[in-house]
Structure formats: C-alpha cells, structure tokens
Image 1 (cartoon, rainbow, N blue to C red):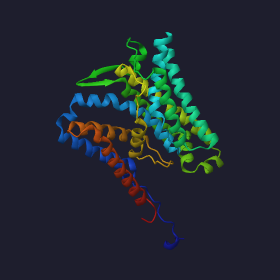
Image 2 (image 1 turned 90 degrees about the horizontal axis):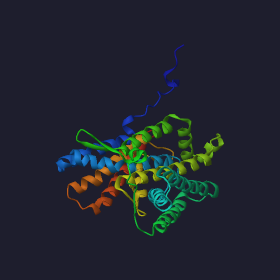
Image 3 (image 1 turned 135 degrees about the vertical axis):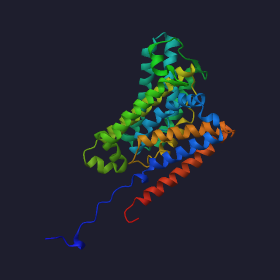
Image 4 (image 1 turned 30 degrees about the horizontal axis):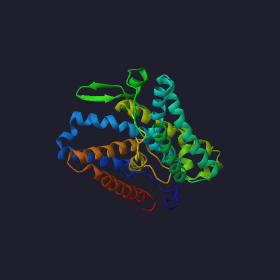
Length: 334
C-alpha cells in the first residue's frame, strides 16, 4: 500500500558546503591575494613569495596545535613564550655546558612539553580556566627565558648538521627559495587533518569541546585528551621556535612576543569555533596564509606596519560575523 503523502518522512536535510566557515575564509583569501597583486605588482614576485613562505610555517605549526586545543574547548596563551624558551634552553646547553646539538634540542623540547603538561594538569585537575592558567604561564616562561639569557639573544648553532638541515635547510625551486619548515608545516597539517576528521581521537576532541560531561558519560577520557593537547601545543611551539632560531641564527628570549594572539586569530579566522566543538585544519591553513598575506601586503602597498593590528582586528570581526551568519543560515527552519 502506498504511503500517505502526509505521513511520509521529510527528506533528509543536506548540508550546503558553501555554508562551511572555511569557504568564507577561502573566498576572503582569494580577494586579498588578488587585491594586493593588483595594488602592488611585486607582491606576487618570486622573491616576496619566498619571504612569506620562509616565516609563515613557523606560526602555522603552532596554529595546528592551537586548532586542536580550541576544538576541545581550551586555548593556550603561553605558546609565544614557549616559542622562545625551547630554543634558548637548547642554545644555553650547547654554549655553556658543551652538550651536542642533538641532546640539547631534545632537552629544549622536553622543557616545552613540561610546560604543556603543567598547563594541562592545572586546567583539568584543579578546574581553573585555561585563560588564567596559560596567561600566568606566559609570564613565568617569558621571565624564565629572560633570566636564563640575562635578557640578551644567543647566537644560534651555525655548524652545518643534519638537525640544522632538517629544521631550517633551504633550496631553490625555480625562482623560489623554499625552506624545510614548509614541509614540516605541510606534513603536520596533513597529520592533524587526519586526526581531527578521520580518527577516533578527533571525534573525542570535538565531543569534549561540544559537551564535556556528555563525552565523559560515553567513556571519553576527557582529562587525558586535554592534557595531551596542551603538551602537543607546547611541543609544536617549541619546535617552531627552534626552526626560527636556526633560520635567523639567533635565539632570543623575547622571540614570539604576541604570537599567541596572532595564532588564535589565524585559527578563528579559519573557521574553528572559539567556544569549542568544531575545528578545521584546512581552514586553519587558510587562516595562516590569509593573515601572513595581509601583514606582507599592507607593507608592500605602503601602509605602516604598525597598522597591521587594525587590519587583523577588522578581518577577525568580519570573519566572525560571516561565520555566525553561515551558522544561522544552516539552522533548521531558516
């Protein structure tokens, strides 16, 4: 017997891919790149593109960890200070104790991991807001770097070793000069994208960010996942700092100042929800490219570099409004 039309179930609602937040970021990126290319023809020159690609992966690597952490409903304001700490610890060990570069780099990364572990334990076991915990840790870590170095930058390791080549080696590809950090960024982005979208851990991360208590009720080890993400984010920040130190031959205790805000902006502009529950690695990569292109482009067209924060603030507000509009448009009944 044919089913009565009135009792037939409604057709399944299909999500419109154009309503995904990263699509708005992609469109904004295309507009920005086209606009700067027209306004400043040298913006798309091989030399300028090479300069952007040299620095972009360092912030991008931190942004990948921050994306996962934000998706779980937390964030880390200490990453800028940790960016400096790992490289400073490694160079102090090399120059003051005579350690080999390999063990020194490992000790630097372990120090960064310890910072992340402390952050994670305090947030999860004591129930203190990650904003307050990591803001305090930012001051502790930055002060420690300044004390250890007496406030002076350290000369980085100049000898050609396998570690220097792997972290900051460079080569020419046609007219472009590329650094090894670009491949670190690409590889880590692919790995993070797989974890977040295709693995059980990614489901756990999103579930914790959406509703922590419901996730725990379903057997998700919420505290362990969050602690692991804090450790991962600090480790990636330390790795990025070491890459930067090798690239510029300098380990500065004030390196990474205000990177935490720029990285969070990149992740949020890319479409990751600041309140947790939804994250996108593809959008984060787009956000990294977008903000670095804006920083470079406004200088190329003659706008003072000090105006960068104004542009970034405006872009963030615009993207947040676009994302909110897309979410509302995707709600049932709209």
